[in-house]
Image 1: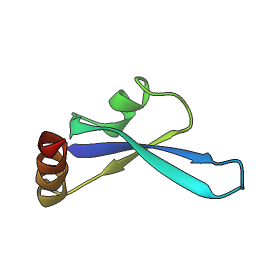
Image 2 (image 1 turned 180 degrees about the horizontal axis):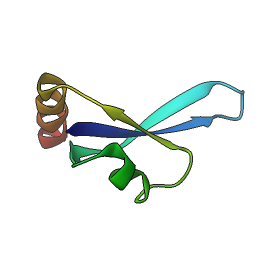
Image 3 (image 1 turned 120 degrees about the horizontal axis):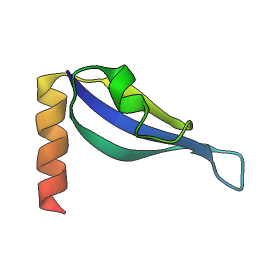
Length: 60
């Protein structure tokens, strides 16, 4: 299963912000949840979105 981990927080003006923490492949999202802090949300993503994230990461 492909996943992305997103940290959700609020800035000093109260605006909701999201920060991509990680992405990759895992057996289950439950297994991955133990690796992250409670404010990080995990989402299942498609193969196409995973490839897009990999490409963006490699460009940086």
